[in-house]
Image (cartoon, rainbow, N blue to C red; front, side, top):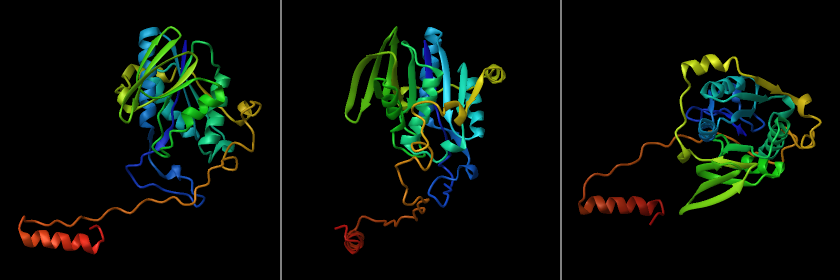
Length: 266
């Protein structure tokens, strides 16, 4: 059994977000972190590994520095890592990204008892589209918003979190599951894990590696192959300090009503 975990290096959105003139993020000028939901997906894979001794492979698409993030995943307990990196893949939207990652996962190989895990969504886009798109392109059954995952042989039972409750779905491997933060608490790297991470295999898939795959086409990858066009990206202005009114007397209430009326709220 093998679990392939798709993770992404994303800008740390707690700081200032830099944008290029073409509307894409200027990632080189921003601090980066591993996408939070992807960490929950990785932890889910590692827990299954603890119980079944399966292999965990992490894969990401990004620039060469993303290899550092993959080493961290290896230090947490993953067995292998694959970096998908090429200029031809740069600027991909969710459709083009899923094309490339699906091709990479297909190249790694999907067997009958394998599982693909993804985070629900990335904090730099918040679309929650890439995981389901990967499943569609690989022809895999998919279950999203996993708050609990149980694996019994080829049977995978997932408790999905909905807005007003939960739904339990059972499927069979191979399948794809997207994970939410409520699923678990990601573990930390260990000192021994950090040392071992540099002896574990980390492969790079470039354009030449994947160009012959049926999903890879110059018209469906990269910025030119992305059907989503961003009209404008910007950092929203910080909100100013609010107005505070003190007192519970009639005059204060009348003043509040006057302010709300002037703003056409009442």
